[in-house]
Length: 475
Image (cartoon, rainbow, N blue to C red; front, side, top):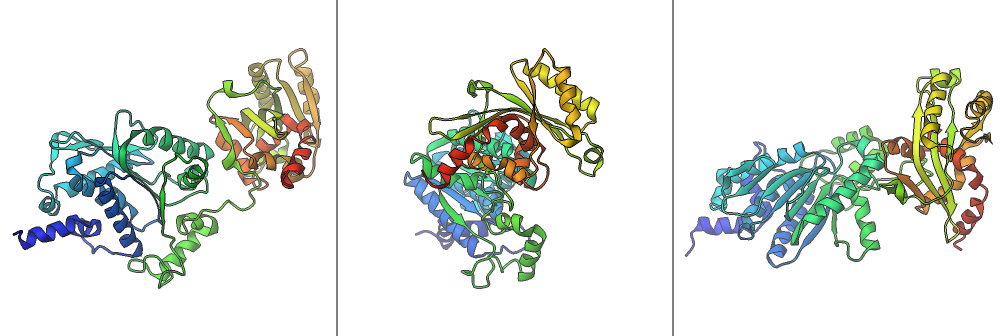
């Protein structure tokens, strides 16, 4: 007959929350909230399902400072190393930076080596010959624990258990379409390719943006029936379903929640606390639908022009946040369905006075070649620039002027439907963030990049009205 201690240990091993309480590593008491219990129950079931040959794909949305890393990146890896010992599992722990994953890895090792853990799993010992902080193993196991950055290399690594904890470093990264695209590419094209046929795959993060991985997964599931079927656990900081109105009153009081909401502001709090990010107010152009291309060879053979939006007046150059001179190389075409497509292959920009500005234009024309005509918006401040540049490029490139358009919203409104239809194509490059940020914030902030794109393709602005009218009435 098993001893009382053996029975107790068996009961602890069967329940993840009991396990976490048993090995709890902090000097202060473990606080257990509604979300703590719900997530722990689901993690327990994931291990049961794995043993039965069933995979788990899980999205966990949780506000900042609510203990998600304690569960997903500290206690759970140690738990599966014990509970799945006979499967010799490969465990991948990933985060936005390798050093964060390595910090989690160090804590998992400490838990495994602790007396409380060894009471439960005495056969689970760390292999002294495979004991690096970013890659280690259990004695006698073919599996390994790998701690990596999402954008790092995981070549050759397997994943029976894949744990992604915090894919976004900060607000700046969250607002960068280029970084969001890279993160998504790394998750789907790198990390997901390491999955075992039966696996536990968990993405646990505070949502930052409508277009971050949490936002993209449901869209991919709707679009592709073969995409992994993720289950979502969402724990907003405030809800009428909570007895106190707040998610974690066991740890935080009402004043803490209200103070954090006030400090973050409505836009940031929607994601970081409400777990439901919002599109930034004033957004006209749906930049999340931009299609990125890795090579210029993917661009169609159409007429490309270099449109210039110039900034050289005294007021523009000496303000606290001066305007940019921008040159966008872009082309447009109507597709087989009669909708307008915008293709942007390059952007250059500077904050310089006229001589340096003109040198940039000269160097850009030399790179573009005679086949790319130059278009310049001839507004009052620098009508002479058109004359100067036309003379400068005589025999080298065709230069034409574009008439001024006072209402910038009306000027660019024809592109709204192009963005929303996903018909904006962009070559992946360092300038992406600069241009996309200006489109995303339009009509607030700087609009030099969008203006340059308009100048390049302004002759399409009138013919696109027909396509816009058709789309708005559903034809």
